[in-house]
Image 1 (cartoon, rainbow, N blue to C red):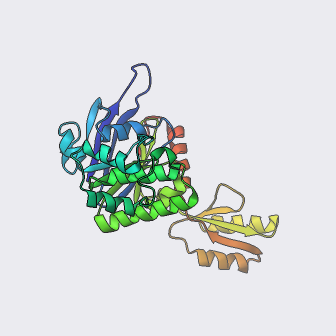
Image 2 (spheres, rainbow, N blue to C red):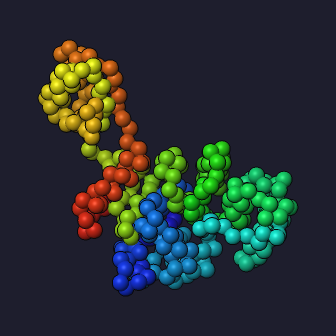
Image 3 (cartoon, rainbow, N blue to C red):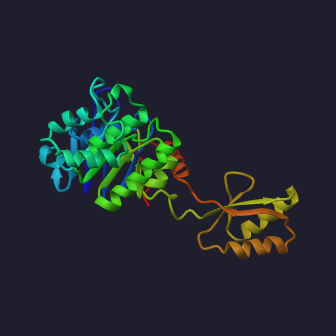
Length: 312
């Protein structure tokens, strides 16, 4: 549904490129995350998607239409929240929506009322935006993005400033959008835990280059990470010896061991007990998106800018 191919952009000849040959693809109906530190190239990539930044090379194709060559046709399929949503403070939320949708031909009243109700702004939509809380502004921005009934929704830090309840509600809305309307969603966020709960796949950018594209669970194939907490130093030594016999290696910590992917953890635990090791805890640790993000960032630093992107 959305494909980025070979994106390159340099704003200053003396500075590193903002984007350096970045490619990724978002499937129809997918929720896809674009991650990276400040300055990684996320905003530049989003600007190119929305036709606000022209790339030095490469293109964005949305629904079969090139943003660079068929801008109107491509962007007619898109709704977006990009950077800080801006509204006319002295107008009501309803008046703002009428003004903003007028630029794209307008939207009928019934559709506006339906979307306003769905985002939860019915009671305050006639009030001045200057009286809105941050969360209400985010709801209004989402309503504005949804009014064209887009096939693709692009969201830049959509939960920024929301309280925990607002974040949970927003997450549920994204799932509902996909299930009911089949909308393809691309979002950029710094909240890794939230992205992990929402996104099917992610791309991680670092210093203008893609360093990872794939699932949100580990890099795959490295093994099973377990925390094995034991009673004493003597027990720890026995654990290390048995771990070596099972081709396991110590992890990043005294209590962590990495078992091979085909290892039988239950058999390993039974042998520890049989050897007299007083096991206090034996837990398999699931890799998180934060682990993945830090891991690929470390790989990037160690290998340098010419390293290839890992994938899953």
